[in-house]
Length: 110
Image (cartoon, rainbow, N blue to C red; front, side, top):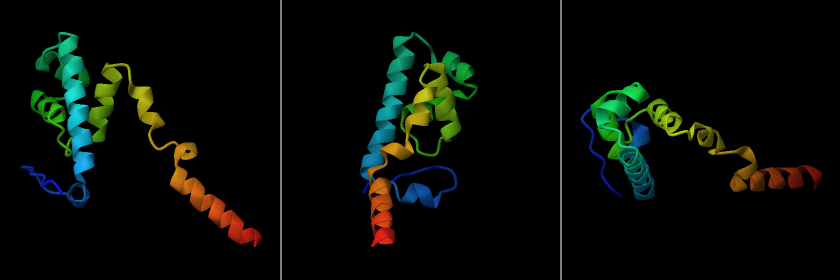
């Protein structure tokens, strides 16, 4: 598992991130940077549009897990993708929870 290093206070939730999760955050950051650059926006312009600082935007583009989800939501809004945030973890698409529901219903009937 990758070791994450952060300058500020550590959180237990960050300590359990898997390599796959860290890579996903880095990929999201890379996509954010690419989208910003393709639109011709500087770090200063994009940070101002998102209501955040340039250092925070740089951390996002590097995949820093300590950046708050609210700042990521602001970035999604800037790029017209904020509605996709609501699609994450849709109850109807959670196969494991659906399996548990079926098992519970089967036990009640039996």
